[in-house]
Length: 143
Image (tube, rainbow, N blue to C red):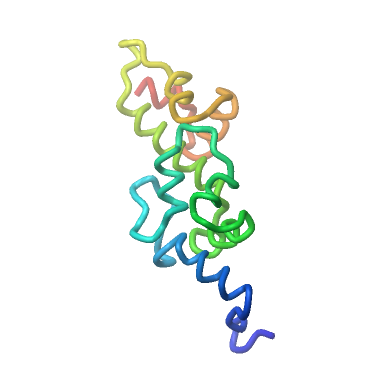
């Protein structure tokens, strides 16, 4: 039952899960950026420490000490996203920083940068990058 726009507090098993999920984020003000994870955010810290590796939502949940569904709910509640979308945004932000600093004339390539940030498919990287930044990675690399 919802009272005054609020759901009742969790009870029993849900209360224990809710306590564990709070370890994801210390406040709802946490934003999905790659700038650091706040004190009590092991899931976010795990993602940021393992960005270039082929990690899954189950890996993140295990690192945070919660189940996959609790992890999903916590990301939705605190960051308004999913764990894998958060991972993709962290990867895209890192690749963007590297593309901006890269020198194409020195042999830096978008493909190599994408690979370092955990993108196995150059096409998917280019599509996600363009969606996030409004330009293709090759354009960022040239400017």
